[in-house]
Amino acid sequence: MTQIIFSDETPKGWIAPSIAAPFICIFLFAISMTPGDLGLEYLGLTDAKGSPRGPLGFCLLLASFTAMGLTALGWVRWVEKRSLASVGLRGERRLKKFLMGLAVGIAMMGAIVTAIALSGGYRVADLTPAFASPVALGWIALLLAGFTVQASIEEFVFRGWLFSTITRRWNTTAAFILTSAAFSFLHFSPRTPLLMLVTTFVFSIFACAWAHRSNSIWGVMGWHTGWNWFGGTGFDVPITGLESDLPALVVKLVPVGPAYLNGAGEGPEGSVFAVALLTVASLIVLLFARPRERDAIDPQG
Image 1 (cartoon, rainbow, N blue to C red):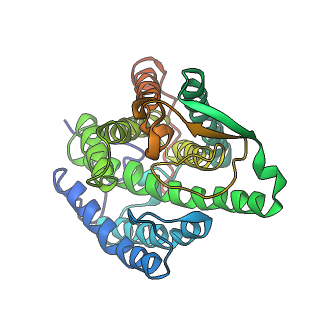
Image 2: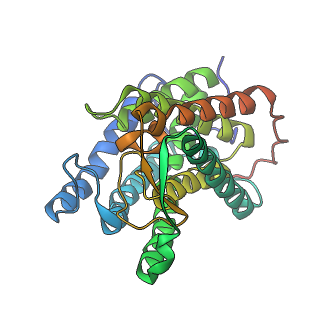
Image 3: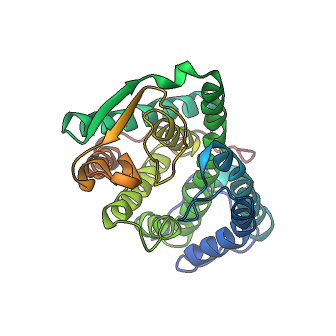
């Protein structure tokens, strides 16, 4: 049974079959981001794994994400002929929802890092070293803006466009699974540990649950931003395997012990604590949180 999320407007264009939508998403992702990725490699701003290196690499990566966002926006506007409201950019108090999501993302990442440290997976090496460097603080502030763009575009593409497209053509369960499968595939590399892949899939399940319950993507955009930014700048550890090369904003932590405990080169997202917290949070949103009363549909978003 098909279902509608975000907006019940009737699309004036073509909506892809549910099974085809993830492949279209992957294709659009590849053609829009590859030129920027090649540019980073040409400038020498990628590491041996092809990931952006340092704060400048992170910031320049935004060109690739911006290209992806514009590509998805063009697809929504010119192929599906839908409004932005129909992909989750809708509702009132948008900034408030984003900031609340940002706070939750920071808190959840902080909880994971704290759990790892208390279990003996991290050793404290220094306190607030970033405050000794105004330049580092400037880069950290710039990365907050950068992660806002990156995370918001990912949420627009996956939990906004792809999730709503599959829901329209199939149902919510299929949308959760196929959206999370596509999200995990695009974060996969041959060297990615299995636990990190599980975290990525559950991460997307939680994000889909948030978008579904709130009937918009503003809050989950903020949550994704806070999660990435605080994980990447707060503790001088990797975020999704990426290194910012900046001193820690809160406390410099050194991984000790087994990789399943601290995530090793993947950072706290590769820890069993990340899987556990995201799983519990997903269940709470899916099973126990009361759905918010839906706003009156605004065709203009």
